[in-house]
Length: 56
Image (cartoon, rainbow, N blue to C red):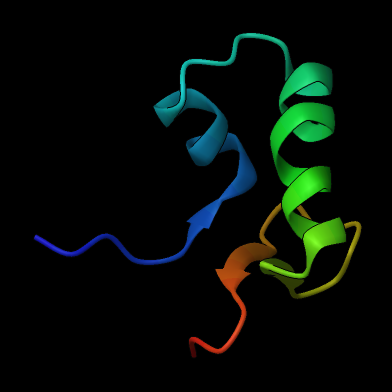
């Protein structure tokens, strides 16, 4: 089964990070800075999704 876009919290849990700060710093922020992913939706919304660039 193909996995679709996930909320940040679900990605954090799937990767086994118990600390959100470390997850954001070590994974999400690095991928955003590299231009590999972007946040789809309001930046402050907990419902915003993380998406791969070039995928819709």
